Length: 166
Image 1 (cartoon, rainbow, N blue to C red):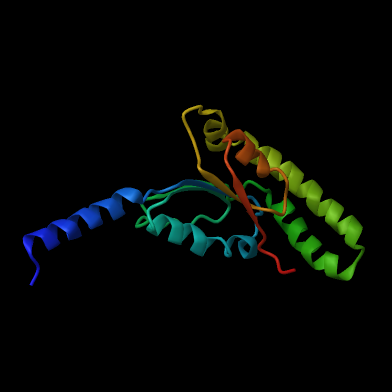
Image 2: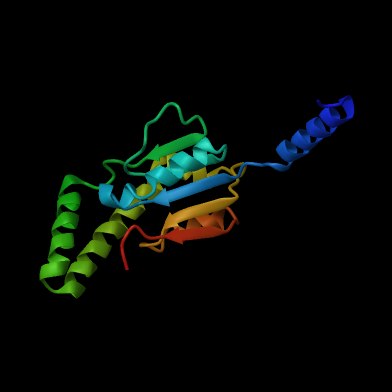
């Protein structure tokens, strides 16, 4: 049987535990317009959101789950033209079958143009220019160097992840 003192200690402990918890504001940046690159990150965004973190993602394949109230998604689907998407897929196949250097050069050229358009996209420009927006952490697909600029812009640490195997 719990005494009044025991209940008060239990309540105090619960209050201290809850007050010590805090949520982070996290920006996720995955700019590769390929579902196979995006699918790796989807469980991460979902879990972080469900655990109370405020997550904003820049993605070409958003989750679009209304139950995730802590998740804000900037949808970049269609930022690459169909011709660029087709060329990227051919380059993926071509890397395994042809001249790796020339295929990678083509792939980087396509992504460079796409990243320029992404950074010029209204919601991203607004995010970058809003002096009130702060993030505690940036999680980026470490395939392209451009997303690292978000960590510099928001003056916070970053985690670089790859959706590719070693």
